[in-house]
Image (cartoon, rainbow, N blue to C red; front, side, top):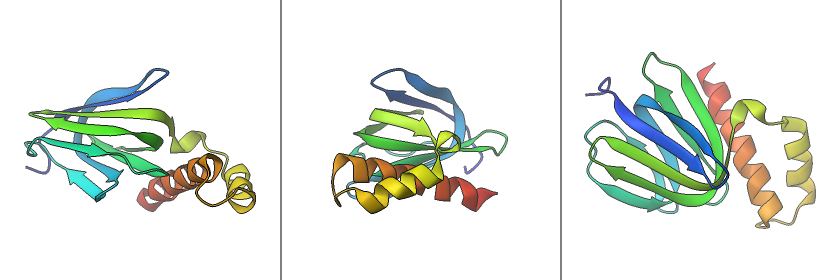
Length: 128
């Protein structure tokens, strides 16, 4: 079943970030990382602060988004990620985020946001 497609929705407070078919999704939750294939049992999880979501699209392209807060819901053939904020790893300015990480107080909103963005970039670069 690793190649069986399923619907994925990534929605942030501001807008729908992604809607499409994927063969695999990884999300960081407060209980740990979760990997999802088609026909996964129904699940509801809280996204980890400073986390990311990776989506392997049908055709093999990997998309990675930094996410701040929210939930992931798995029901039947649909995975829905409801994030407070999300942005694509490809849009992240690594140097700026490393600077924020060094100067922000550990655990602060700014620190977690920078940490999330840098994790997303690292995950995206692992594929290349």
